Image 1 (cartoon, rainbow over the protein chains, first blue to last red):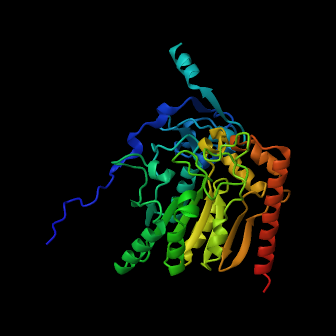
Image 2 (image 1 turned 180 degrees about the horizontal axis):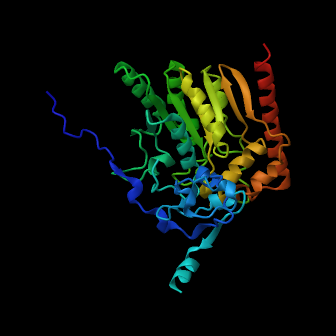
Image 3 (image 1 turned 180 degrees about the vertical axis):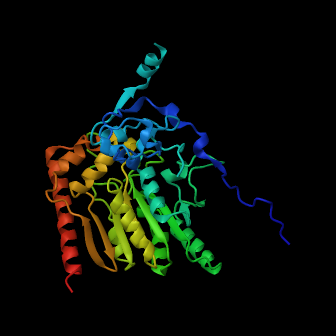
Length: 108
Length: 288
């Protein structure tokens, strides 16, 4: 009789959310909520996916009709800063800011 | 799919995987050969997908998924989707014989080829799927202009020649189209083949934010037409009304930077020829 070990094949069990890939970023996408029309195209094309939904009242809506839709937020733990969201945004509501300049801003 | 994977910035293949899994659901088993997706989930013990995933050798994806399929059938689990997810090298060149055998035997499987048009994982070597005129590290150009001058191998047409029930092409810039095709394929019993064009910023030498834009341009310039073939009947799913000149697509990418106007003209002729052939095929297959 062949006795198999308890785990005959190595199975990967640790979720990759442990890797905080946000450290790869050079440019940081920043959502300008006054312009955001909540179309979720950024969510649609995020390769990570690092774009998450937030409650509708987290940020003021540009138009009252949009107030019932969820807002989006970027999870900076994982965002690698590729810029697809900023390139695809139909109303240019995402700007790419150099990471160093944000650090300087925060230091001030 | 979980964040934290190790794909490059702006990777098209990860968007492709997102949509494939969105359309197929959790009841899925994947098999991946050596390709970019073999490294994207990270090193052991990390996982980035919520579905079982079996790594195989480069040339045996077709054999592996037919084996999984028959084993599941023997266990009575016929509702599980078995998917082979391979790059263009593992499909068009190395894995072609295993794929051909698997689809010829008629197992109820999905084979998804994400087409980034070279061996990107190992460092941008030329594959059968590399388009005409492209620079790669094994077609480096130089004074003798040793770029790839052979036209791109059309794996979708090879699959149509196998008389399988469903063949389709898709791209990441049209996710609704991609999901609709996979959902349609899910209803069909038998081998299904879907080719997804997924731009690679590293290998195509474009800036990472242009990934989706370039794949959209590939469709709008007729470089990569989107169509599906159901039991031999062609249907073009996205028909650009006024196709853009191929130059717009080529100029965004560094791998085509060296092309002269005459060479662009030559590529344009090749693209037009293929598009006309496709229109003819659509017309002829819908006639009777």
